[in-house]
Length: 303
Length: 236
Image 1 (cartoon, rainbow over the protein chains, first blue to last red):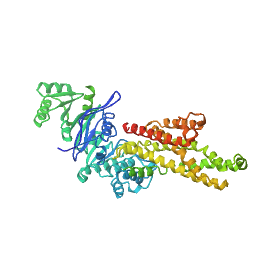
Image 2: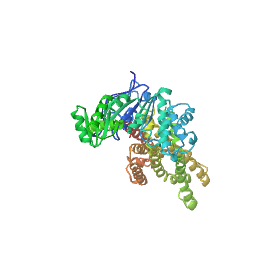
Image 3: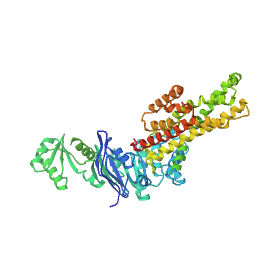
Image 4: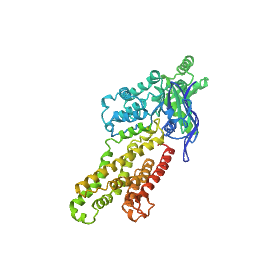
């Protein structure tokens, strides 16, 4: 497989604090890689290292199969980025802001209009960015990152500060990039719901360590199902099910069964009814990805 | 690449008052003499037989102060453009070398100061003609008094740029600037090795060229040191 991003044993220390520990990140071509982790987990530090803004304390970073430290400029020609809060020059107009970037990137002038149209800012192109809303500034940042048609797009929390319609808009835009322009996208977020809807691969980082890196389908498999029973006397019901050899779990006033094949559920219902229990509800209970994410990051904290 | 960076930098300083300041500095210096000569021209002309020379000396008494103050303000402005929304991270993530970024910032500032010096020369010459100081215009002296202080102040420019680009807190470069201003003000009492004395073109040997050569030499040195430090730092 061809990896666009490949880090080997990358660590970063700030004084005594270790922000990133032995990171082994792999991003294949054409993927949308969701980089997930709670605030302060090391996402932004990792992204800064990928862009050469910070040097790793140890380990090597390869982008496009080239060593970042040796070929930084060559590599960055193919990378577009938006790191954390959008950076802009408030005293300049949207157009001038992009022009300042365009001059350095050396791309054709009409690209400015093109990217302004992509993020739908063409109407305010000649207004000073000072007066923009956060969402507009964010979109301007994305426009800047698309200027030179990068092969790798790195977006750090791109939907921060956007309203719901803005979030959907950006999400739709990001989804189309790999298929339309052959871009590979790295997108970070602390919200799993965000990543869940666009990413094809997920990396979860907590306390500077990558604790999960696989396809989103694999992550979803962790979302195993339970069937929950709400009955009149849950403790008795639980004892009854256990004594009948079923794997049951008592939770507040509900009983959970992990094996949820039709036969088992039917068997459990029959047992409960025969024992004179009033069965109020039988429900499928799916663990949300949020819960898995919380659980994963919590386990790591405990260890 | 450096040419692209430079045009981009010149675009960024638009509407920030850079050009106004570049104009105000030399204009202010000459305007002070307009007041001086406007109030007591006859008295001043009596002070010396060399009216042009005396006039140039008067103009030059304020040039170093304006230069040092101008450098402090412009470098701080320059850094604030990037600091305001932490645009450093955006700039450095572009395919440019950090050395060239630093060089372009320095070059823009040096160009502005040089432009100031040109204006100073024009204003000095023009007001001298208005005063009708005699037909023997000391062209070489006008050029020297306009450009030597700038060349001698290059170390201050390099130092201020270094301090303001690497400081998270812009109070630090401003403090350095104010201290520099006070030192320049007291140039007469300072030993020759203090860089803030150099723009005054004074030294024990009474040889202005010495300050210029020192300024260019030490300016380059401080520039290189600042640039290396800048390239080695992580971008926050």
